[in-house]
Amino acid sequence: MKIDVLLGLQWGDEGKGKVVDVLTPRYDIITRFQGGPNAGHTLEFNNHKHILHNIPSGIFREDKLNMITNGVVLDPIVFKREIDSLETMGIDLTKNLWISKRAHLILPTHRILDAASEAAKGKSKIGSTLKGIGPTYMDKAGRNGLRVGDLDLDFMEKYEALKAKHKQLLKQFDYAYNLDEEERFFDGIEIIRKFRRVDTEYEINHFLEAGKSILAEGAQGTLLDIDFGSYPFVTSSNTICAGACTGMGIAPTTIGEVYGIFKAYCTRVGGGPFPSELLDEDGEKLREIGKEFGSTTGRPRRCGWLDLVALKYSLMLNGVTQLIMTKTDVLDTFETIKVVTAYSVNDALTDRLPYDLSDNVKPVYTEVPGWQTDLTGVREKEHFPKELNDYIRFLEKELQVPVKYVSVGPDREQIIEM
Ligand code: GDP
Ligand code: IMO
Ligand code: MG
Image (cartoon, rainbow, N blue to C red; front, side):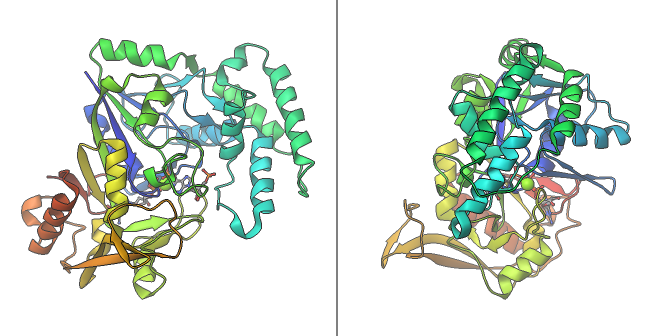
């Protein structure tokens, strides 16, 4: 058995939550291996919409085991809120959600530091979700972090020491804050205590040997990767496939399929370069039809045409074996669809993503005819309009990876296997 990995190939919000929910029946175990509550993964079924932040998107399918592994940073406050909301739906997760002892905890002061640091950056701010992600990973790399496994050790001592360090750091910012959230943090800690806290790396490798099938759910997207994204406008973890190895404790040779998920166009929320961004009517139309507002922060997402230069870079970094195209229906009414097939940098054409993605990078577009057909009710590929088939063939030829699923709406049912 191998571990399959599902990853976002753009700037996040590609529809990972929906597709993980669709694929879950084929697996025994679903994991989240990096990121934290900066993620917002939306699932829709039976006219019900649910957004998950810390918890893997496998939890709505019965009898599946879900794991939050070591690469994740976990916020007890958000976690409790998620658990409470699932409880109101009659879902008790205490049996089928396991948490790694090695996962780092987000403290209220991490969130304050995130906000203070962003405020201090002024115009050059990253546009962080302000969930404390950066400061928590900083403490992890700086070897100061507090981990889930510490709940059974000298937790309070470590907590106080880290809080004191944060208070010291906060002195350098002119930033007013209070610690009102501390009580809710400890309520969340009590909820985490109800869950199995294990060495997920042993459990996963053991399950693998026993022939269980595992799907690893990425968060954010490749172009937000700490190493390969448009630094510093990135998140603080490795969002690429290699992040699944370090984020779960699995060998690279255990990875099977790599599902790369992308929207039929592009969005980005927060700051940073976005070569194919549309600041015109088309951009507005994509945002409106695609309901492009952040699942975690509600911010309007910036919209643009599909960028194959960026997508090819993502394929290279991840070793994608199957493509999943989402939000295809959002393009239903466009007469023509544009796709970036090269960049012009200082008047020279390139198919590489340059180190400096600033204003001197101009996208070069290829135009293809739109299908101008409502896809939301389509359930079989035989019913695809010719122009959509042509669009898919065009992408496959450019990308050299097969498109295996096409999503045509937010609901669990609105997806076609090719
Ligand atoms: P994630 O972070 O990758 O899980 O994606 P988000 O949940 O943040 O954002 C994707 C949004 O698009 C959600 O509101 C989904 O319900 C919605 N969505 C997913 N797939 C489709 C699709 O094929 N068509 C449409 N119209 N919406 C979709
Ligand atoms: P999912 O998993 C889209 C963006 C933020 C900001 C940058 C850094 O739902 O696809 P951070 O909070 O990590 O310090 O923010 O990354 N960002 C996301 N954008 N989807 C996400 O997650 C994101 N998580 C972080 O908007 O630009
Ligand atoms: Mg999201």
